[in-house]
Image (cartoon, rainbow, N blue to C red; front, top):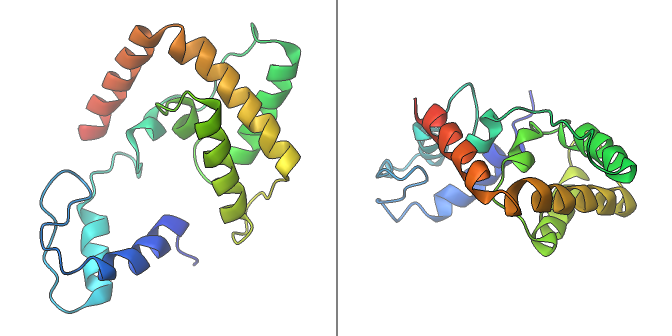
Length: 164
C-alpha cells in the first residue's frame, strides 16, 4: 500500500531535524531521536493528535457546502473543486481553512496540482486549477471575510472537536 504524501514527506524531513530533541509538530514536546530514522518518523506521526484520522481540525468540518445562492459559474466551479479536492482529502480542509486571499489560494492550489502529478489521484490542468481558485476566493469572501465572527466560531468548534 502506498503511503500518503505527507507521511512520505515527514519520513524525509524528520530525520534531518532529528538533532532537535524538542521537535514538536503538535504543540507538545516531541520524542527524542534514538538512532532509528524509521521509528523516529513513526513516533512523531503517532504523537500527532487525530480525530477520526484527521490531520487538520478543518478536516472535521462538513465536506459539502450549500452554494445555491452563488452565481451559476461559481456553482460549476464548486462542483469541480469538490471533484478534484475530494480525490486526495476531504473538501472541508479547504472550506474551513483560514486562507482568504486569492494569491494564497493560487499558491496552494498550484502546489496541490504539482504534487498530484506524482500521485495516482485525480490530476487537474492549470485551467481547472484556476477555476478552483476562483471558487475558493469567492467563497472565502462570502463566508469568511464578510462574516468572520461566525466563521471564527465554527473554527473554534472544530478545534474543540479535534482535541477530544
